[in-house]
Length: 71
Image (tube, rainbow, N blue to C red):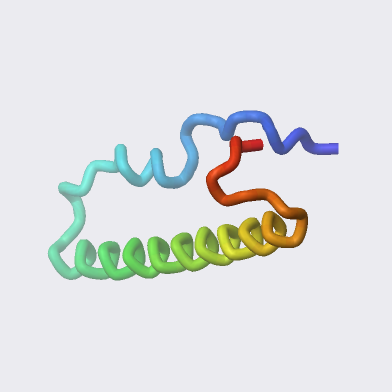
C-alpha cells in the first residue's frame, strides 16, 4: 500500500524543466515549448478545479463548512 501523505520527491518534472539550459533551443523550438507548457498549465488547472469541486461536493454532503479547519 502506498502512503499518499509522503512528500513528493525532489527533482519532479517541473523542477527538471525549470533547471534546463534553454540556450541550445531555436526561437521556433522555444515557441513550441511555450505552447506545450501552456497546454500543461491548462490541464493542471482543470484537474485542480475538478478536485476542488469534488471536495466541495463532499464537504456539502457531509456538512463541513467551507471556512472550517483543514483536515
